[in-house]
Image 1 (cartoon, rainbow, N blue to C red):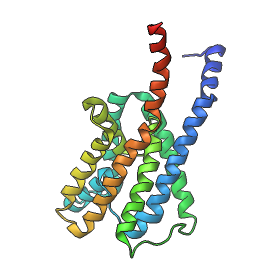
Image 2 (cartoon, rainbow, N blue to C red):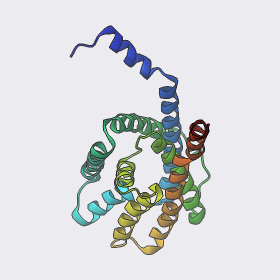
Image 3 (tube, helix red, strand yellow):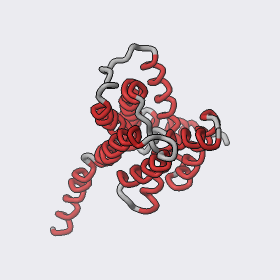
Image 4 (cartoon, rainbow, N blue to C red):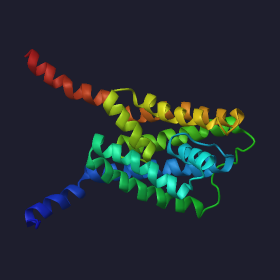
Length: 228
């Protein structure tokens, strides 16, 4: 289908709008924060994860499925659900976040570790890791994008069942972590649980921060007009 000059101009203008630039910048900031924590805390201390990452480890242990195969399969399933529930626009911005995640991972890996080694303090590492994941993923999800299959699945559950987003993340993460007890000692899982219990409500907080006040501010003039 051939587009007219007006249509091309409209689409280019939409891409260059301030709202689009701000959305891209917010996603980039979220990806930077998330990957910084994953690289400098999770990977250094050895904190495991729930969700898709935990599912990959679970499938590899019990069925011998390589991570290179399990990862795209699980992500594809989650993104397919997200496509039907959340729409094509969600996938577009999720693709942008995927590229940014890869770029930021490459950046942090090219630099020495920029955060103190917390290997001797696993509890502190769990708390700090939860904060980085919660804030980073929250900023990405706030822009209706996804930092991975976990976000796509949690957002889909949130939309279909109307549950709080934090409960959706807890459900997906805890389900995998509980199954992981079949081969990982409880002493190692407990710190991952701490990270999950911090990151899940924090994502919910970041996504909703300021939005209730904004809606009330927009609603007030309409109510005043009706009273008049």
